[in-house]
Image 1: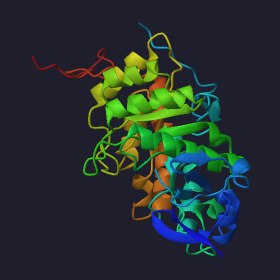
Image 2 (image 1 turned 135 degrees about the vertical axis):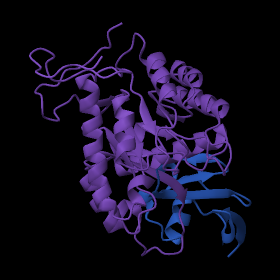
Image 3 (image 1 turned 180 degrees about the horizontal axis):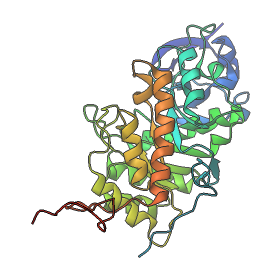
Length: 69
Length: 286
Protein backbone atom coordinates (compact mmCIF):
# COMPACT_ATOMS: atom_id res chain seq x y z
CA UNK A 1 0.00 0.00 0.00
CA UNK A 2 1.38 3.40 -0.96
CA UNK A 3 1.60 5.91 1.82
CA UNK A 4 2.09 9.66 2.05
CA UNK A 5 3.14 12.08 4.76
CA UNK A 6 0.75 14.59 6.27
CA UNK A 7 0.82 16.63 9.45
CA UNK A 8 -1.92 16.25 12.05
CA UNK A 9 -1.93 18.70 14.95
CA UNK A 10 1.72 19.46 14.36
CA UNK A 11 2.80 15.79 14.25
CA UNK A 12 4.01 14.14 11.09
CA UNK A 13 2.06 11.03 10.13
CA UNK A 14 2.12 8.45 7.31
CA UNK A 15 -1.28 7.62 5.89
CA UNK A 16 -2.55 5.57 2.97
CA UNK A 17 -2.92 7.28 -0.38
CA UNK A 18 -6.40 8.44 -1.22
CA UNK A 19 -7.65 8.75 2.36
CA UNK A 20 -10.41 11.28 2.97
CA UNK A 21 -10.84 13.43 6.07
CA UNK A 22 -13.63 11.09 7.17
CA UNK A 23 -11.33 8.03 6.74
CA UNK A 24 -8.58 9.68 8.75
CA UNK A 25 -10.91 10.62 11.62
CA UNK A 26 -12.03 6.99 11.72
CA UNK A 27 -8.42 5.83 11.77
CA UNK A 28 -7.68 8.27 14.61
CA UNK A 29 -10.72 6.97 16.54
CA UNK A 30 -11.88 10.53 17.07
CA UNK A 31 -15.38 11.29 18.38
CA UNK A 32 -16.47 13.02 15.17
CA UNK A 33 -19.33 15.07 16.69
CA UNK A 34 -16.82 16.61 19.12
CA UNK A 35 -14.28 17.90 16.62
CA UNK A 36 -13.77 20.37 13.79
CA UNK A 37 -11.17 19.94 11.07
CA UNK A 38 -9.01 22.34 9.11
CA UNK A 39 -6.91 21.36 6.12
CA UNK A 40 -4.18 23.86 5.26
CA UNK A 41 -5.84 26.50 7.46
CA UNK A 42 -9.24 26.16 5.80
CA UNK A 43 -12.20 24.72 7.67
CA UNK A 44 -13.60 21.53 6.19
CA UNK A 45 -17.25 21.40 7.26
CA UNK A 46 -18.57 18.07 8.54
CA UNK A 47 -20.69 17.59 5.43
CA UNK A 48 -17.54 17.59 3.27
CA UNK A 49 -15.39 15.20 5.35
CA UNK A 50 -16.28 12.20 3.20
CA UNK A 51 -15.45 13.83 -0.12
CA UNK A 52 -12.32 15.73 0.94
CA UNK A 53 -9.35 13.66 -0.18
CA UNK A 54 -6.03 14.30 1.51
CA UNK A 55 -2.86 15.07 -0.41
CA UNK A 56 0.77 14.55 0.47
CA UNK A 57 2.03 17.41 2.62
CA UNK A 58 -1.40 18.49 3.87
CA UNK A 59 -1.43 20.06 7.31
CA UNK A 60 -4.50 19.23 9.39
CA UNK A 61 -5.83 20.61 12.61
CA UNK A 62 -8.30 18.46 14.52
CA UNK A 63 -9.70 20.52 17.36
CA UNK A 64 -12.25 20.05 20.11
CA UNK A 65 -13.65 22.03 23.04
CA UNK A 66 -11.79 22.34 26.33
CA UNK A 67 -12.39 24.36 29.45
CA UNK A 68 -11.73 28.05 29.00
CA UNK A 69 -12.71 31.52 30.12
CA UNK B 1 -29.94 63.39 31.29
CA UNK B 2 -31.95 60.87 33.26
CA UNK B 3 -30.58 57.34 32.79
CA UNK B 4 -32.95 54.85 31.21
CA UNK B 5 -33.82 52.45 33.96
CA UNK B 6 -35.84 49.31 33.84
CA UNK B 7 -37.82 49.08 37.04
CA UNK B 8 -38.08 45.82 38.88
CA UNK B 9 -41.51 44.29 38.85
CA UNK B 10 -41.47 43.98 42.62
CA UNK B 11 -39.06 45.43 45.14
CA UNK B 12 -37.05 43.04 47.32
CA UNK B 13 -36.95 40.34 44.70
CA UNK B 14 -34.36 39.62 42.11
CA UNK B 15 -36.93 39.77 39.34
CA UNK B 16 -35.28 41.59 36.47
CA UNK B 17 -35.27 41.69 32.72
CA UNK B 18 -33.21 38.92 31.17
CA UNK B 19 -29.85 39.82 29.67
CA UNK B 20 -30.21 40.30 25.93
CA UNK B 21 -27.01 39.73 23.97
CA UNK B 22 -27.82 39.98 20.29
CA UNK B 23 -30.34 37.23 19.62
CA UNK B 24 -29.47 35.41 22.86
CA UNK B 25 -31.62 35.89 25.93
CA UNK B 26 -29.91 34.90 29.18
CA UNK B 27 -31.63 34.57 32.54
CA UNK B 28 -28.43 35.07 34.51
CA UNK B 29 -26.18 38.10 34.21
CA UNK B 30 -23.13 36.01 35.04
CA UNK B 31 -21.29 34.29 32.22
CA UNK B 32 -18.97 31.70 33.69
CA UNK B 33 -15.86 30.08 32.24
CA UNK B 34 -15.13 26.36 32.29
CA UNK B 35 -11.33 26.56 32.60
CA UNK B 36 -8.95 25.65 35.43
CA UNK B 37 -11.26 23.53 37.61
CA UNK B 38 -9.64 20.70 39.54
CA UNK B 39 -12.22 18.26 38.13
CA UNK B 40 -15.23 18.19 35.83
CA UNK B 41 -17.40 17.27 38.83
CA UNK B 42 -16.34 20.39 40.69
CA UNK B 43 -16.87 22.47 37.56
CA UNK B 44 -20.38 21.09 37.10
CA UNK B 45 -21.34 21.85 40.68
CA UNK B 46 -19.87 25.35 40.55
CA UNK B 47 -21.63 26.17 37.27
CA UNK B 48 -24.91 24.90 38.66
CA UNK B 49 -24.52 26.94 41.85
CA UNK B 50 -23.55 30.12 39.98
CA UNK B 51 -26.98 30.16 38.33
CA UNK B 52 -25.46 30.88 34.95
CA UNK B 53 -27.03 29.71 31.72
CA UNK B 54 -24.10 30.66 29.50
CA UNK B 55 -20.61 29.21 29.75
CA UNK B 56 -17.43 29.92 27.83
CA UNK B 57 -15.33 27.22 26.22
CA UNK B 58 -12.00 27.19 24.40
CA UNK B 59 -10.99 25.49 21.13
CA UNK B 60 -7.83 23.36 21.26
CA UNK B 61 -6.12 20.57 19.38
CA UNK B 62 -7.65 17.20 20.12
CA UNK B 63 -5.05 15.12 21.92
CA UNK B 64 -5.75 12.15 19.61
CA UNK B 65 -4.23 9.77 22.14
CA UNK B 66 -6.88 8.91 24.69
CA UNK B 67 -10.12 8.19 22.89
CA UNK B 68 -11.43 6.89 26.22
CA UNK B 69 -10.47 10.06 28.10
CA UNK B 70 -13.39 12.21 29.17
CA UNK B 71 -13.94 15.26 26.99
CA UNK B 72 -15.35 18.54 28.30
CA UNK B 73 -18.32 17.98 26.00
CA UNK B 74 -19.15 14.76 27.85
CA UNK B 75 -18.98 16.62 31.15
CA UNK B 76 -21.42 19.43 30.42
CA UNK B 77 -25.12 19.40 29.66
CA UNK B 78 -25.06 21.14 26.28
CA UNK B 79 -28.85 21.34 26.24
CA UNK B 80 -28.86 23.33 29.49
CA UNK B 81 -26.14 25.87 28.74
CA UNK B 82 -25.60 28.18 25.81
CA UNK B 83 -21.94 27.68 24.95
CA UNK B 84 -19.86 30.73 24.15
CA UNK B 85 -16.71 29.63 22.32
CA UNK B 86 -13.71 31.91 22.75
CA UNK B 87 -10.64 32.59 20.65
CA UNK B 88 -8.32 32.56 23.66
CA UNK B 89 -4.68 32.02 22.82
CA UNK B 90 -4.84 33.86 19.50
CA UNK B 91 -2.32 36.59 18.83
CA UNK B 92 -3.44 37.61 15.33
CA UNK B 93 -6.73 38.53 13.72
CA UNK B 94 -6.25 35.73 11.18
CA UNK B 95 -5.87 33.02 13.82
CA UNK B 96 -8.81 34.37 15.82
CA UNK B 97 -11.02 34.17 12.74
CA UNK B 98 -9.88 30.57 12.12
CA UNK B 99 -10.61 29.58 15.70
CA UNK B 100 -14.01 31.28 15.61
CA UNK B 101 -14.92 29.23 12.52
CA UNK B 102 -13.71 26.02 14.16
CA UNK B 103 -15.70 26.75 17.30
CA UNK B 104 -18.81 27.40 15.26
CA UNK B 105 -18.31 24.11 13.40
CA UNK B 106 -18.12 22.14 16.66
CA UNK B 107 -21.17 23.88 18.14
CA UNK B 108 -23.16 23.29 14.95
CA UNK B 109 -22.37 19.59 15.36
CA UNK B 110 -23.58 19.74 18.96
CA UNK B 111 -26.70 21.63 17.84
CA UNK B 112 -25.95 24.20 20.52
CA UNK B 113 -27.50 27.65 20.13
CA UNK B 114 -24.08 29.25 20.71
CA UNK B 115 -22.98 28.33 17.18
CA UNK B 116 -23.69 31.82 15.90
CA UNK B 117 -21.55 33.80 18.34
CA UNK B 118 -18.01 34.06 19.62
CA UNK B 119 -16.11 35.66 22.45
CA UNK B 120 -13.36 37.34 20.47
CA UNK B 121 -9.98 37.54 22.18
CA UNK B 122 -6.98 38.70 20.20
CA UNK B 123 -4.12 39.12 22.61
CA UNK B 124 -1.01 41.25 22.36
CA UNK B 125 1.48 39.28 24.45
CA UNK B 126 1.65 36.37 26.85
CA UNK B 127 2.77 38.30 29.92
CA UNK B 128 -0.09 40.78 30.16
CA UNK B 129 -2.68 38.93 28.05
CA UNK B 130 -3.88 42.41 27.16
CA UNK B 131 -6.04 42.58 24.06
CA UNK B 132 -4.49 43.92 20.86
CA UNK B 133 -7.01 46.62 19.99
CA UNK B 134 -6.04 46.95 16.33
CA UNK B 135 -6.14 43.21 15.64
CA UNK B 136 -9.36 42.87 17.67
CA UNK B 137 -11.00 45.52 15.49
CA UNK B 138 -9.84 43.82 12.27
CA UNK B 139 -11.06 40.42 13.45
CA UNK B 140 -14.40 41.93 14.51
CA UNK B 141 -14.97 43.36 11.04
CA UNK B 142 -14.16 40.03 9.41
CA UNK B 143 -16.31 37.94 11.77
CA UNK B 144 -19.28 40.31 11.56
CA UNK B 145 -19.03 40.03 7.76
CA UNK B 146 -19.18 36.24 8.16
CA UNK B 147 -22.38 36.48 10.17
CA UNK B 148 -21.01 35.96 13.68
CA UNK B 149 -22.40 37.79 16.68
CA UNK B 150 -19.14 39.05 18.13
CA UNK B 151 -18.63 39.69 21.84
CA UNK B 152 -15.37 41.61 22.03
CA UNK B 153 -12.96 41.26 24.90
CA UNK B 154 -11.34 44.68 25.05
CA UNK B 155 -9.32 47.02 27.20
CA UNK B 156 -11.38 49.49 29.21
CA UNK B 157 -10.51 52.24 26.73
CA UNK B 158 -13.75 54.00 25.75
CA UNK B 159 -12.47 55.00 22.31
CA UNK B 160 -11.62 51.49 21.15
CA UNK B 161 -14.89 50.35 22.72
CA UNK B 162 -16.73 52.77 20.45
CA UNK B 163 -14.80 51.60 17.39
CA UNK B 164 -15.69 47.97 18.17
CA UNK B 165 -19.36 48.83 18.48
CA UNK B 166 -19.24 50.74 15.19
CA UNK B 167 -17.64 47.69 13.56
CA UNK B 168 -20.74 45.72 14.49
CA UNK B 169 -19.78 44.05 17.78
CA UNK B 170 -22.84 42.58 19.50
CA UNK B 171 -21.31 43.50 22.86
CA UNK B 172 -18.13 45.15 24.02
CA UNK B 173 -16.59 43.49 27.06
CA UNK B 174 -13.99 45.71 28.72
CA UNK B 175 -11.61 44.06 31.16
CA UNK B 176 -11.86 45.12 34.79
CA UNK B 177 -8.16 44.24 35.12
CA UNK B 178 -5.83 41.70 33.46
CA UNK B 179 -7.16 38.16 32.86
CA UNK B 180 -6.89 35.97 35.95
CA UNK B 181 -5.29 38.78 37.99
CA UNK B 182 -8.09 39.04 40.55
CA UNK B 183 -7.58 42.79 40.83
CA UNK B 184 -11.24 43.65 40.27
CA UNK B 185 -12.36 46.80 38.47
CA UNK B 186 -9.21 48.94 38.50
CA UNK B 187 -10.58 51.92 36.64
CA UNK B 188 -14.29 52.34 37.28
CA UNK B 189 -14.17 55.76 35.63
CA UNK B 190 -13.19 54.21 32.30
CA UNK B 191 -15.96 51.65 32.60
CA UNK B 192 -18.39 54.50 33.27
CA UNK B 193 -17.21 56.35 30.16
CA UNK B 194 -17.45 53.12 28.14
CA UNK B 195 -21.06 52.83 29.32
CA UNK B 196 -21.81 56.43 28.38
CA UNK B 197 -20.28 56.06 24.93
CA UNK B 198 -21.79 52.68 24.13
CA UNK B 199 -25.26 53.29 25.55
CA UNK B 200 -25.72 56.84 24.26
CA UNK B 201 -29.04 56.81 22.35
CA UNK B 202 -28.86 53.02 22.60
CA UNK B 203 -29.50 52.17 26.27
CA UNK B 204 -30.02 48.47 25.61
CA UNK B 205 -26.59 47.97 24.03
CA UNK B 206 -25.02 45.31 26.26
CA UNK B 207 -21.73 45.94 28.04
CA UNK B 208 -20.10 43.12 30.00
CA UNK B 209 -17.12 43.36 32.34
CA UNK B 210 -14.88 40.50 31.32
CA UNK B 211 -11.77 39.54 33.25
CA UNK B 212 -10.07 40.51 36.48
CA UNK B 213 -12.80 39.53 38.95
CA UNK B 214 -11.19 38.17 42.13
CA UNK B 215 -14.04 38.04 44.60
CA UNK B 216 -17.73 38.75 45.03
CA UNK B 217 -17.42 42.47 45.75
CA UNK B 218 -15.66 42.95 42.39
CA UNK B 219 -18.79 41.66 40.64
CA UNK B 220 -20.99 43.96 42.72
CA UNK B 221 -18.81 46.98 41.94
CA UNK B 222 -19.02 46.23 38.22
CA UNK B 223 -22.78 45.71 38.28
CA UNK B 224 -23.35 48.87 40.35
CA UNK B 225 -21.65 50.86 37.62
CA UNK B 226 -24.46 49.77 35.31
CA UNK B 227 -22.84 47.10 33.19
CA UNK B 228 -25.24 44.44 31.95
CA UNK B 229 -23.30 41.42 33.10
CA UNK B 230 -19.99 40.01 34.25
CA UNK B 231 -17.91 37.25 32.70
CA UNK B 232 -15.56 35.43 35.05
CA UNK B 233 -13.69 32.17 35.38
CA UNK B 234 -10.60 32.07 37.59
CA UNK B 235 -12.30 33.87 40.49
CA UNK B 236 -14.50 30.81 40.97
CA UNK B 237 -12.31 28.02 39.60
CA UNK B 238 -9.27 28.86 41.71
CA UNK B 239 -11.06 29.91 44.89
CA UNK B 240 -10.34 27.67 47.87
CA UNK B 241 -13.95 26.47 47.81
CA UNK B 242 -15.17 27.07 44.26
CA UNK B 243 -18.80 26.08 44.86
CA UNK B 244 -19.14 28.56 47.74
CA UNK B 245 -17.53 31.26 45.65
CA UNK B 246 -19.93 30.47 42.81
CA UNK B 247 -22.82 31.17 45.19
CA UNK B 248 -21.14 34.36 46.42
CA UNK B 249 -20.67 35.55 42.84
CA UNK B 250 -24.31 34.87 42.04
CA UNK B 251 -25.53 36.83 45.07
CA UNK B 252 -23.03 39.61 44.38
CA UNK B 253 -24.29 39.93 40.81
CA UNK B 254 -27.88 40.23 42.01
CA UNK B 255 -26.84 42.69 44.74
CA UNK B 256 -24.99 44.91 42.29
CA UNK B 257 -27.78 44.80 39.73
CA UNK B 258 -30.43 45.64 42.33
CA UNK B 259 -28.33 48.47 43.73
CA UNK B 260 -27.88 49.89 40.24
CA UNK B 261 -31.60 49.73 39.50
CA UNK B 262 -32.37 51.18 42.94
CA UNK B 263 -30.36 54.34 42.12
CA UNK B 264 -27.84 54.91 44.87
CA UNK B 265 -27.55 58.17 46.80
CA UNK B 266 -24.88 60.60 45.68
CA UNK B 267 -21.60 60.72 47.59
CA UNK B 268 -21.20 63.87 49.70
CA UNK B 269 -18.26 65.26 51.60
CA UNK B 270 -20.18 66.11 54.79
CA UNK B 271 -22.62 64.23 56.98
CA UNK B 272 -26.39 64.43 56.69
CA UNK B 273 -28.27 63.46 59.87
CA UNK B 274 -30.68 60.55 59.60
CA UNK B 275 -32.63 61.59 62.74
CA UNK B 276 -34.72 64.78 62.81
CA UNK B 277 -33.08 68.05 63.71
CA UNK B 278 -36.23 69.27 65.42
CA UNK B 279 -36.97 68.59 69.10
CA UNK B 280 -33.43 67.78 70.11
CA UNK B 281 -33.04 68.43 73.88
CA UNK B 282 -29.31 68.87 73.73
CA UNK B 283 -27.52 72.11 73.00
CA UNK B 284 -25.72 72.12 69.67
CA UNK B 285 -22.02 72.87 69.65
CA UNK B 286 -21.11 75.88 67.59
